[in-house]
Image (cartoon, rainbow, N blue to C red; front, top):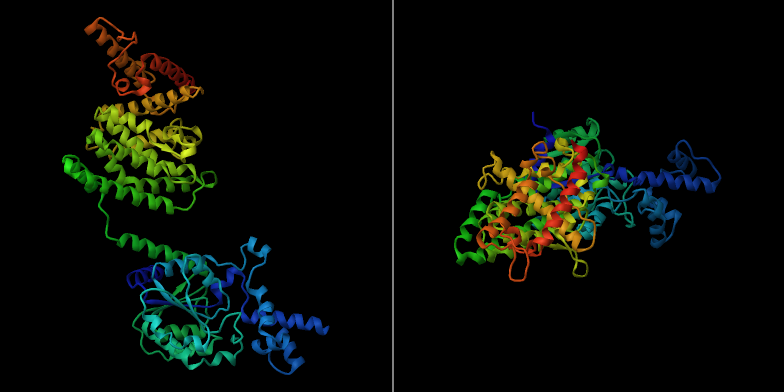
Length: 594
């Protein structure tokens, strides 16, 4: 049998704006907001102290014996204080937090209020009926930028009927008034009758809307119960929630309205789960954006036709800005205070978000031309420009790997050089090459233990497996070609990083990836050795062809592609010591791995 909460989520999501809320004191219970009766009893206790008497254990009975009548909320307040301003100040401490209470999270909008505000902001809830005096719901809506229409008096209800049919906005009907309203209803006699305009408003709401009831027992509010009972039309379902099985009036109302009962632990958990389910269904129900293969196909198509450069630019930028907006909206995620499961979930979330743009990046860097270079550089820079904790750099990290490996697979070292040298992060006064920001161990070490398959290079190994599928179209990932391109990218990344460090007069080092441990038992197969041979052969080739290892300025020259595109200053004498120092660093760092 389908869980009623699941059924409710489907109903709310598929019938936007059709369901109204009926909220009682239980919704504000976790905020420790007192009910009207709680306030009456507290005032009686204070009154008894001033009379020099003990009103316990039954303050209401003491009051009746003392003054010959049952305690009446409005009358009691009128006797204790004389003017409306005095009344407001008397009630304010019951509903507004002190500094200490605020620090303890008391008398503030609860998770339930915030979840309701989210549903209102998305248009799922437009009408709310509440018996509560507090303003926690209004505060939660205000934090979302919404100013609801509040109906808490007979006058306010007049002319409010058209609001119900509006497609936007929200009205809150406070049937018992507001704590700052002198006409607040609390006693049994006060709760028996509503003004005609309020009755008409409730009749229309209960006739035209589905209903979600939470935190209300159905016992004390006689006039509100009567409004539900006289409604004969039940076109939409009534969902009644409570922490215990319904009895008495609640059970009668559920049967009368042919409603469904949902047992909950508390209002916070109920509305939190409801909102999550509704938004999950909303996301699933959205028209699906172009998936990764379609986007990659369009990039490839536009690359073949110079007349489509503007289309390519617009297509990529649209996806970049979509991703940027999603990442910017993310709440701060603090690595140091999260569990491994939370970390894995956040990493997977970023990977899902980046997938479409990654497909475009790989395709563009594999088949693109020099004139498209800035498009991919700007793409990486934009996504790297997300303020917040260091994990926010992870999507840019993936893009850099995807574009860098693709450019190596294409033999396009000009683009490879641009991707690793040109993207920067930070403001104009404090710019830093992105490659420096992505390399620190403080960023990479967060992956240790989270992806334990390769404890020494967890991030590298994770990216190695992550990128296999996106590269299937361009590289035979089942043979050594993908591994060779991946290791070559990471080793050149480390060399360029080391070169940056040395040029700044800092210690020479670079981030060690899978290449640091791969083929350690066969040194001649490591990427360090393969690149060493390539480099030396490029010099030997010049010697064989020209019998001269130097150019006209007496500088040793090489045909090695990375040098030819300007990496390492296009200087053999600069590259050799960098490679030697980095290889020695790698040897020292990886010695303990074996």
